[in-house]
Length: 180
Image: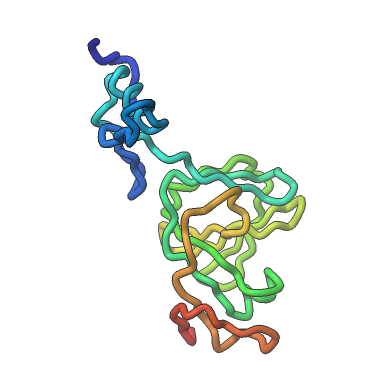
């Protein structure tokens, strides 16, 4: 059977690609699900391509603002600074992405608060959910980890501004802690 040229599959998704051509069945009597997928991929002419992981999606609490991330987020950070504490009520956990990798629906409901000359914070004007933290002069944004729907595929990497953390909790996860 010849490959169907009208069927196009993504060849990669950041560092998370699933090679279909390498899937094998471990049971000779009955093909496993992975072998069935590999067989289907071969039938469709996609045996040496990769299937992309679905984009991460998220939203505010009321659903007026939603977003999709086209790249895998990086630099998962917990910020304990005074501004993040005041806005979130605790510390703020976020991930970084290039601005171009964040697609927003309902952008008219985002209010940007200029919290300092260098930083602005985006929240839903209807429900108040804090979604974004953005350095004004940079080409990236931070997305609130708690606003992402489902598994994120990331783990916190570090804590920052720990000198400003409050006394009602301890940081005992073993991750690096930066004073600033």
